[in-house]
Length: 285
Image (cartoon, rainbow, N blue to C red):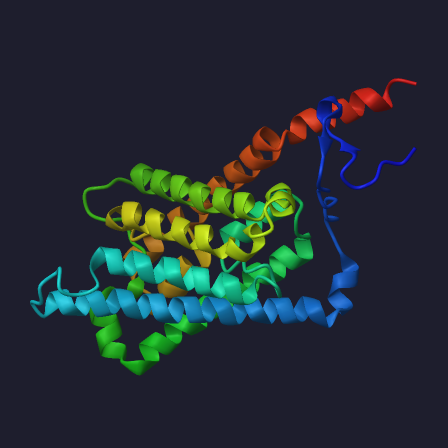
């Protein structure tokens, strides 16, 4: 007998009141002929452009205040920079979640791809759109005042003096793990089914995750945890130091996202246990 929703057996025949969506195919050719697919790609481009525009302006504005001898506590400070990044993610995820999922970050897209929640073609196009959006967003900031932009570092991510590359890489791995783990938890279908308010509030914990990670890692790497953000600033600023450290802001987030995807899918959601149980069931006649 086919079980209805609310009676689907989990590992150990424990009933559950939700359905996990089936894994997405590696390649989804049908997506390429749908306007909704390209609309989602455009949404990722615009959201990342706005994200970089606001946050990079905040960073160079703060550095400009400090350079002019203003009281470090009188401007936005590190707390304000972290708040700008976190609140912009909250706003943009809220605005775009219903269109593209509100990734705005190649590391988030990569983690969801590894968990088979998005197809390869969607992940690839999202990452391209995010990187182009980041470059355009920073480009607009520089276009307003090139001298001011270049004098105050262009918002580029660089490893801070006193920290070695291993420390920077570790900060990016852990910071991205926190972010992507929060994304998985906030969008978990199990939570959505049992708590109706969870989908509405999902952007809030994601934004707070970005906020707290920035507080912790701004002094180390300036906080990347978003390869598009780091690439966009490096392309427009185009200084040697920014390019020398660029690999940290790609390798670290990708490793952190992969660990978060594995941890959530196979440890917390018992994906490995379900796979073993399914295999055992199929081998018994």
